[in-house]
Each structure stands twice: as C-alpha cells, then as structure tokens.
Length: 77
Image 1 (cartoon, rainbow, N blue to C red):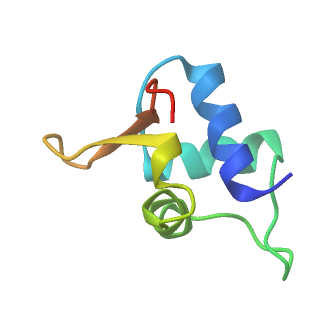
Image 2: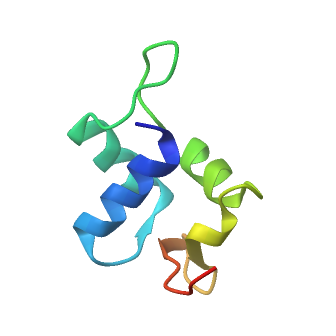
C-alpha cells in the first residue's frame, strides 16, 4: 500500500477529518504503511503527501482549524 492509499483508508475508517498527526498515528497503529527505511510515518510526511500536486485532488484541507484537518474530497474529478 502506498502512503496516499493509507491516508485514504484511515479517513474512510474515521468518517471525519483528522489532523496530519492523527492520520500518521492511525497509519502506524494499523500498520498500513512503513517507510522504506522501516520507520513509522509522521505527521510531516502526511502533510507533504496531501499537498503534493499528484494527490491534492483526493483530499480536502480545512485550514480554519489549528492544527489543520484533512478530509476526503467528495468532488468528482
């Protein structure tokens, strides 16, 4: 499973937006994704992935909250 797929899985399971750290914690708890070097995922990696142009269309960011939350984009692309 790729990191963006793990993020989607966690958001589908939670049924609500989560912070990047919460997403990373759930990915690690559920063992959905491990870094190439074998380490756990952190919130910075989640943040980088959801902001990457390749995957931006999949996610909805709410920057009105602190820390910002990430949800699934329900718009069809």
